[in-house]
Image (cartoon, rainbow, N blue to C red; front, top):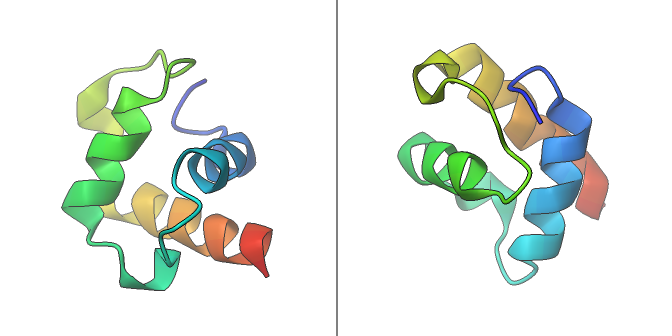
Length: 64
């Protein structure tokens, strides 16, 4: 997965952290969780605020 695979990342995060409300996640934690995903294979430094916000919104949509 790359940073641009926003929906796939959201699905993986929802499965990896079912107890977490994505509305309460800090971007530093979100960044760490994304790069820790088994299938993630991209430059860790490319996860900027706009991408993290899009992932967070997709994660919220995924669980609702």
